[in-house]
Image 1: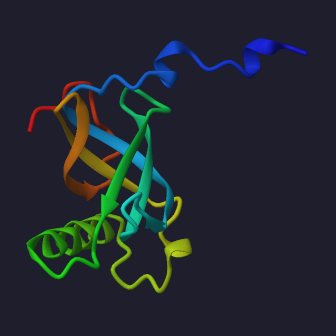
Image 2: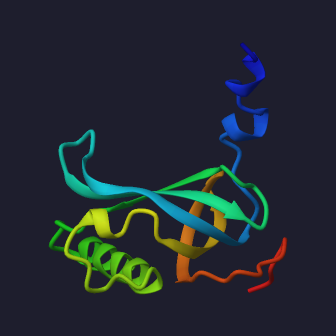
Length: 130
């Protein structure tokens, strides 16, 4: 068998943040998640599909059960994701998987952070200013 089919490139295995910018991504996983501290959260995993860094994963966690300001921010961010994915009326996580969105990413503390979601834009170019 061809071992190269099963070995990822160094970039795909890398945990180095992708550069700041806009990236189209597919929601490949979303659902309930329990943190190490035992908090129930919602976890979303995005697979970047372009314009560069294809195959890199971006992880987001939403602690929507928190009654304080953190919970309010998490609910607002999750709502923004659902709106960008045209899924405000989704009745379950299965209806959100495979949806595409545009992520606005920054690098913070040597990791990526999503600062905004937009409906997917088909023609993004590397280093899209925003």
